[in-house]
Image (cartoon, rainbow, N blue to C red):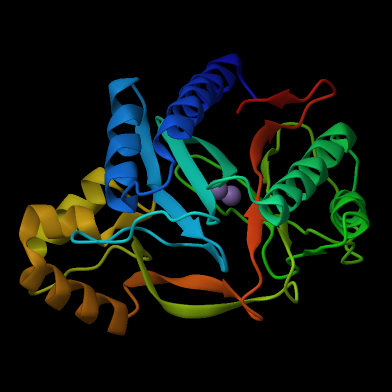
Length: 295
Ligand code: MN
Ligand code: MN
């Protein structure tokens, strides 16, 4: 990987780190999830980054893909376990990182959060060219299980490429028996999820974000399509962003039609099957003999 690209990843990572510190002050009892998402996305831009995907703010049994809607009234409550998943890019080079918070002093939340973080830290120690993804999954599972919880088996880490968040490789949160190995220059996100539920997520209703699958000529909403192609390319975007710019009615018609034609993909909310609480921790790492943890 050339130096210039490494620098872009590092810059995206520096911004993501600063945004996590910023987030810590926003995530508190009675805060609105919509205000938090707007503030964090604005902060990313203020620091010179681009938003790689809408801020995900998923609470309790919702493991991922909750993106606030334009008139979202949800507020954070005592004992909520809140996951903030942040994406920053520079020229398409993405830093993907997540952090979990407990609202108030809830001991189960705190145990879940440290289980996810310990899983992540143990996994990071293993990273070098040649290690298999199942070895990484194995240590994640060990840490989470020894804390008395389950890893979520059908959510995984992944590799990243320019303007691509999930580009082929998956990194499991348990030993899935894969003999696929990490190679020098891979950029990967490792993201353990720990739960006191069953360890499986199922799809719920639409979570508020979408992404373009293929460039297509549309009859209605050409301006929306053009906006997506120029501003987001194949990266996920929030329905809220389109609602603000094009209005709800036009946006709904456009998205419904494009999802039906499979031009645009919708991201459903992912909930823990038994409504267990879920904690997540995530870093983006460049795989080298001396790995670089960019976030
Ligand atoms: Mn993430
Ligand atoms: Mn990720």
